[in-house]
Image (cartoon, rainbow, N blue to C red):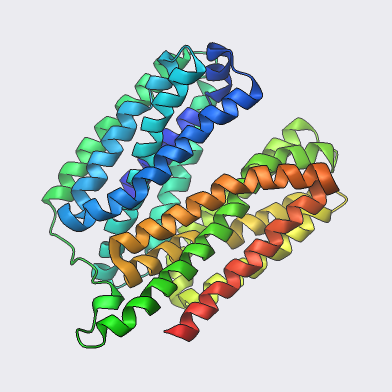
Length: 374
């Protein structure tokens, strides 16, 4: 299962590092490119609820393989778009594969977590982070060697090969027991528990949204904050973001052990509060070392919030619970960067970034509300 998460992260990063080249290719303005990029989100959000229903009908495993195959086939297409409209069209397909893969993978992972009876969901998401780091690193190294068309074609081919190989193993392996949503766990009080289960999924989805808001904001604004506000060099700013990404990956690798050691609710509480404190330090620190330290704390704190929220939403609502929480989480990733941008124009980037501390605190407190309602 980890291989699918790694491929997902690798393919998305392979596309992201080539966005500047694609922009020049289609001669897009900033606003036109922004509209085209919104098509990724539109394709993902439109697909996620549908994929949740497909997982219920056909099983999460075959839908996972199909979604990642679609994503692998869609990755090379932007390199052959020669207008903004054409780029938007292929990015709709790319977003559909990406959004479908995220719902299906997480649904299959929820079943495996139930089978193993261990909170291993953070380990799967660590695979995504590692795949993203690998995709960005390889893409950066090959940026001056391979054309965009060849780089994305090879990335898509690699993704397809890994998907097929891992898919054969996954589909032939012993089936994991499908998680029965908690709202259907008891036959007699099921009707009474239905609204409660939906509320639990909604609260966990809001946890994912608050977490993804922070992830999206940090991804897009870290280097600019370090260079413009803390006066770091370009190299130091890049190293600062790399430190954040490495901290998040490390936190997810350790996530299973931490979940067992502290419990999922306590880990989410500590993670959210750590991220909030780290973001305040990163946003308001007067020196580069202190700011980078803050971003490291943000990475460690946010690392396990999203995967644990998705896992618990799947336990409460099955594949459709995963779909709802993932859609809300993706919405947080979508709104974070522009909200920070508008606030930065109004009050400055450092103060705008402190909103990440607020959402991280909310992400820490929502799981306590969930536990209180169980």
